[in-house]
Amino acid sequence: MTIRKRLTLWYAALLITIIVVFGTVTFMVVRLTMVDNLDNTLRESARQVMVNSRLVQIPADDLQPRVDVQLAPLDVFRASNVYVQAWEVGADRTEFQGASANLTALGDIPLDPDALGSDAEENFANVNIRDVELRVLTKPIFVGDQLVGNIQVAGDMATINQALDTLLLIMLISCGISIIGAGGVSMWFSHRALKPIEDITSAASNIAVANDLSTRLAWKGPQDELGKLISVFNHMMSRIEHLFNVQQRFIADMSHELRTPLTSIRGNMEIARRYGMDDASMEAIEIEAGRMSRLVNDLLMLARADYGGIVIEMEPTELESVLVEAFKQGQLLAGHRDLKFELGEIQAVRVNGNSNRIKQLLLNLLSNAINFTEDGGEINVSLTREGDKAVITVQDTGIGIKPEDIKHIFERFYQVDTARVHSGEGFGLGLSIARWITDAHKGDIQVDSTPNEGTTVRVLLPALLDAEPSEHVEHITYPTLSRFLRRNRHQNEKPHHSDPDKHYAPRQKDTYPDYERSNGD
Image 1 (cartoon, helix red, strand yellow):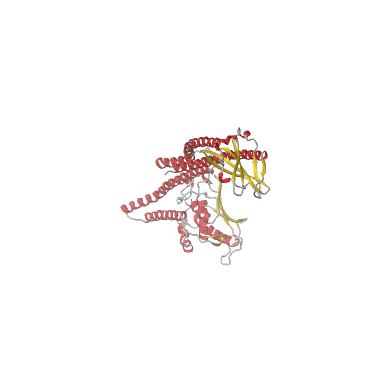
Image 2 (cartoon, one colour):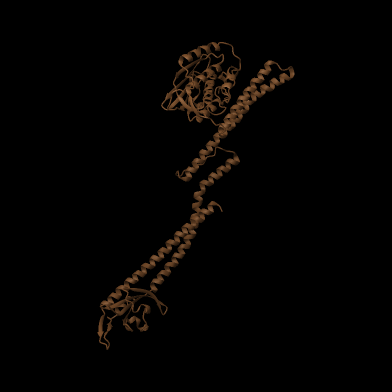
């Protein structure tokens, strides 16, 4: 059974129940009201009879005298359709004393035989006499404390029964019409209530058939449950469309990135097949294979991060030591480039994090700064504390980023101004990895850039309250950094191999076995 049919049946059953209950209550109230009005009439008639009647004591042979009930003229009750009888009641006898003129044909038959001799103040009963239903009130007559008689007053129920029968017929007809109307109203209401859900179903069907992820539902009603459902559906479709576009771009970029090294490898292999393998061809194949290996490793890491396959072990970390070490390796990444590296303010800050991943984050940011900064430019790195946040700042004087590109730079394979990049090794994954590492440390990464002036990247990580350095971590002072920078300047003047990995990769892998460098993006 469909939801619409179930809703229709439930609504119809509810409306029918309400109608039946309301009709039953109305019928009972009307009946009780009419009977109560008749009872009041009988009470008033009995009171008038008793007030206008006399009790006459008749001497008897025994000690207990008889009481004769002398009724007042009862013709006044004929117009009101009220019947009256008077009965003398003794210990061993019940004697008829008189009746109103409209009961002549009844004779000495009591209106309510079961109530004669009752000393109750009021005794109402419905009795049938010769197929006529009467409402009978029996009241006692006392002399002192002795019961000497009963007055019975009756009213005809024909008028009430006729009115109730007519009311019942009208209510049955009305209930039948109401039930039919309730069914129609229930069908209309269920259709109206389920119309937005049908629209969602139709939209989802159109998406499945036409592959149109731009479909959205229009809603002009209030933001009730259905309004919220449609809003959630539209938001979900926006997310799906965005993810689908990202996936398409990811596949296209992945194909493009893999096509270049594969084409180079195939070309060199063809040359080697024809003329024999030489050192240049071997080196080219090695370089392209290394690029493909790094690309696959980065993609594998991001895929594992997406489904929670990477567990990052957190521990209190001296952030300044990690930053300085990443700064040293960042200078080696520059190779023979004419770039000025400056280490700005460094404050002692401890965070709960993973030093290898934080170092990977910093190297990705430094690699970006190196690749997008012209020769003669500057790169500045600093570490400060702002409230409960540790703030790492990487600032360069490079080509900058356009405002419309900033919101996309953390997407995988997204690259800007590739023609002005000083390294052909970028894949567009470095900032995606940087964002994932920042999120894993419950931090935030912010980018502020001006085209042709430079870019500033700020990484904010939750700082520990205790900012003192650990006893097991060497605290690097400014004189030590100065000596290190002077030593590195002399090293940078020496010629370098074209593959920057060979400057630091062996040492890096020995020190951080689980770390793979991501290229600048």
